[in-house]
Length: 343
Image (tube, rainbow, N blue to C red):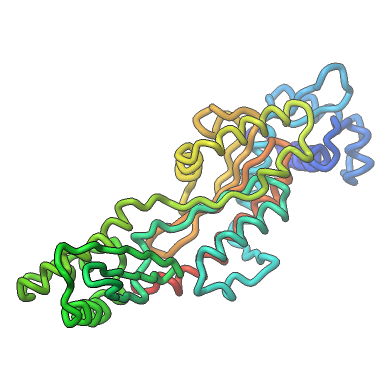
């Protein structure tokens, strides 16, 4: 909306922030008194009327005050993203301390986001196939039972027990343990290189057949894996909601019951280059009304590995949401640079 002057944008910004803080329609007199705008009430009143004619503000019922529309929130949030873009934010805890336990870091990030903003926090974890093998062990439990333990760079542990047709040769089990330690440590679980090491044609038939029997410990774990999702703040989402916001938050909680829908919501709304804000009909293809979304991706310079997002009613503190999401994405990116280095 190029026709909006800088003064109108400033008045819109202050009105949105006042309404977010109080939840009450904002009049011209109150706006001048509380925000310190250096213009008269009559000038502000005229500007508010023009902003309303542009569809950025509306009158609730017969109130003399105005509230932002979805379009008003959207313009306000987009300008905030541009203003805050490039700034480094900090979280109130040190993610680096959890560098060996990515799951713990993601869980704590989710809880911190929801507590700091009182919004619904969503954090998606990197797919298991993106992690590298940090440790592998092959042990004989019984004459015909072998267990394979795989520990990944993210701290994840998978165990798989294999029942064999005949008693296993202890020497073959020890060979497999040594071979896997030498050949697959440091490789990504989902990589073609790891698969080739498990199917090495130069190996003797007996060893190659035994590896083929153990192969599902690596391959099936990736095939069955779906992005892990951490959710925080659902219990308190309705606490500060009022009026139509209650219905919006209830619809949001209904979506949480459908994991695939939440993951789609996260991925569809993200731009790897910057923080993304979606307002009203822009969220979930128009299925979620009166809801706003703030999200960002985290990962390596070459690819995104996961996402961080906040969801809540239109009347949210957008600046805090944007700053918090950006801080979380920045810190998680620093963490996964070490965890996924060379993967």
